[in-house]
Amino acid sequence: MVPNIPSNFGDLVRFMNSLLPEKREKIIRKYRPSAPRTPHDPRNLTQRSIMARSIKQPVKTQAEKDEEKNQERCREFTELLEKCCDEGICFCKHKLPENYGKRCRVLERIMREAKEQPTLYSSWSVEDLQTEVRKRNIALPKKRSKAGLTKLLQQSDSSRPFRLMHLPVEVRLRIYGMAFDGGRTGDLDASSRADIAEPALLRTSRQIRDEATAVFYGTPYFRFHLPWLEEARERKEWFAGSELKWLQHISPTNLKDLRYVSFRLSLLFDVYDIQIDLASRSVDDWLIPYGSMRLTCPCQRQKRWTLAEWRKKTSDMARPENQEIVSANFDECDKIADKAIQDFHALCGQGDKIEPTIAGLAILAEAAHFILDSRDFWMFACVDWDHY
Image (tube, helix red, strand yellow):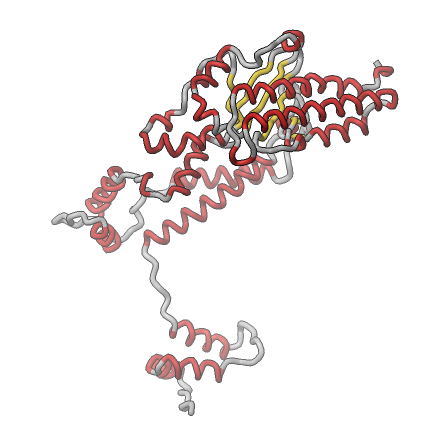
């Protein structure tokens, strides 16, 4: 049986607070309207007030509020920054994307607010500061002023170590991958020896070196330069100079961790790349950038086609008299690439058990050179020379 409900609002609140939670919920269920009422209905407002008072919300500290505010600001900044980076100035379109100016202004505002925002702990009360000092097991000073407590916490922040090795192994491996920047291409240039040296992170400690070495050699594309034209046709060794020194320097143990390589062929007026996943047994995973490395807009350089996509697009654009020659050239490229993949895996293993060697990489380098050397012919076959 539900007791009578007082008519006075103050008595109603006191009455509800005096009830046990089960009875309070029973009363609320009985007097809850079956259909939704408008926000202006006083009975609806009264019911919401009763429910809000009956449920005690946890009180957030100033530190938690500041943390939520900073996270929201960082989230907004990151989303806008990614949009601006993805849709930045495109030289091939000769125009800015829609709402680009508005996004830039919002980014500038967020950065300005972040620069002008007060220092940490400035909005905290003395009670919050004292609580935080006690949590860190710091002795409270005799004069517990806000300035003194803030100084203690700031000194503690500057001396607080970040224990990387206390994190789980999976998290550490992700941090190593971000530190090595998995999206970059490690360029082994014969004219520079700077890339022969290992990253400083691998020289931090023995444990970090043991954990991060495989991540370093297995994440980025390491680029090798191919010899040019006639020199390549008479060449017996595909790696020489600093590239060969680097391959010998990293030792067979680290060489086995290579998973992605890129070969570059520099011609007189252009530069072509091909990217290879060493663990793949399909030539369709060999990626060739759509445009030139020198003359193409940066947004076009990010486009990469497989040999099958190049065959289709070139066949569609080629002149009728060149269709047969283009098809024969792609057949030869597929044949050479398939044989190179088979020979490489027969020598270096398959799948997760793959262990690349210098001889195995040389097999892929020879096939990559033939394909990149044919790329000029693909474009030549598509040009209508009668208009020149």
